Amino acid sequence: MPFKNRLVVTFRPRYIFRFNKNSTASSNNFDLLKTLLSSETYSALGNVRSIIQKLESENVTGVENVFHRYSSWDIYQSVLSLSYLQKQRQQQRQEQHPPQQKQISPELISTLTKYSIYSSAVYGWALNVGLRRKLPKTTNNLTNFLKATNLTAADVIHADLKSKTGRPAFIVVKDTTTKTLVVTIRGTLSFKDVLTDLCCEGENVNVETSSTSSWFRRKIVRAPDPNFAAHSGFLTGARSISKRCKSKIATFLEDPANKDYKIVLTGHSLGAATAVLLKALWADSFKGFQTNCYVYGVPCVGEETGYVVSKLDNVVGVVVENDPFATISLGHLVEISRRVGWFCREKEVRERVCKMRGEVGGEIEARVIWEKMEEALKLKAGVDFTTKKFFPPGELYKLAADGKELTRVENRREEFGEFLLKKVGLDFPLHVPNVYEDSMRKLNSSFHKV
Image 1 (tube, rainbow, N blue to C red):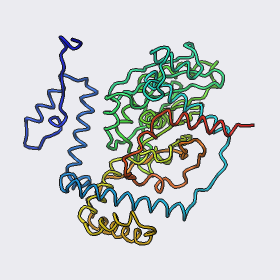
Image 2 (tube, rainbow, N blue to C red):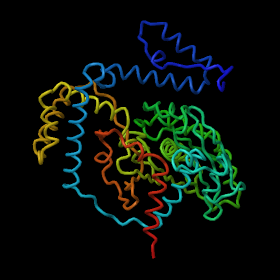
Image 3 (cartoon, rainbow, N blue to C red):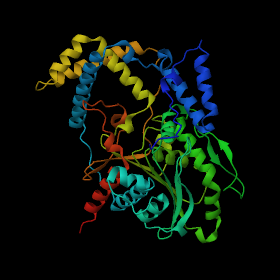
Image 4 (cartoon, rainbow, N blue to C red):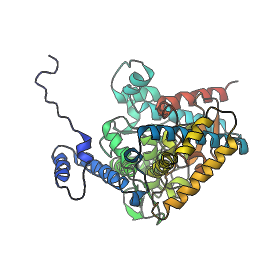
């Protein structure tokens, strides 16, 4: 028997997170995990539990628990209705404000293509097996990364390709041909990475700065913006990476032979968000060395006008069109829950919208219904709506999945301010790293055709 003499331990999350203020049994169950899990994983689970607890309290977050209040049929019809209205609004915006085609330099296309390969290769052999359906010659992730990026073992400064909760996998290499030190951070690939993703509350960030001649190593803390906040899970990952590799990077850059090097931070998904926050932490470090950040499938990291999202320079992000992770934050989920809840209560309205889905036209009526919903929710929300939306950071470009077009995003809120519902579910396949790499390769090839 293949499973003979094996001990299998199964955890049931509903018992971990099902608790109330007057119950000590649930606390005891959760505390039991402290003896079974690493401190990082236990801490992350505690953060997730806290978030769930807040989500259950509508007066704190503004979320509406539609799954407890309404029938599955009501929710299904409401999702269809809301999806139809969102699609109508998208079409109206595109007609009123068609995208402005601005010239993008071939050099930027080449750079984005290059680091999309890095961001994809850091996933290792699992990417080829799981997504490309190719068997690798070796299961050594470092070897696969070096082969994909045309580097050698001598170019590796630091490699930590096994992730833990709050500690993403990453690699630091030197590219001697371009004199670039590249920090590549892996995205979500394990359950522990998922826990990092789920720690999605806002947390204030302090920039690591320095003084005196030993500026590479000393840490002095200052806050760049008193109202600044960022995704706490990604921020924890960035701090962890800084702690593990900053001194090695400092040692490398202190060598006079490396005075002409620049730094590039890159990654996909969780790796993208962590790379951006790492750049924020290092905003006042490594002075005299240019630091650029190229990220792919970057999720929502901070508030729209916050330091990381709108004030951090030299951050370029690529988001495949309709990638759902660019519009997922607690604020987005609160908003969508309220809209679905409104349709659940307004039976006649949702039934009318469902009929409109099979009719020609209806744009004006759809706009009227949308405005009616927004006005009702504005009145209902009152002052208890405190959960703010987070947005993708940096100078953003929208990439067509077929690799035929790359356009600059001019209005962050208009492009990423709304979580879009789909009749057939979310477009998760558009988020995977090989889609970004393959699309950028196609785009780069078309740009450089003679």
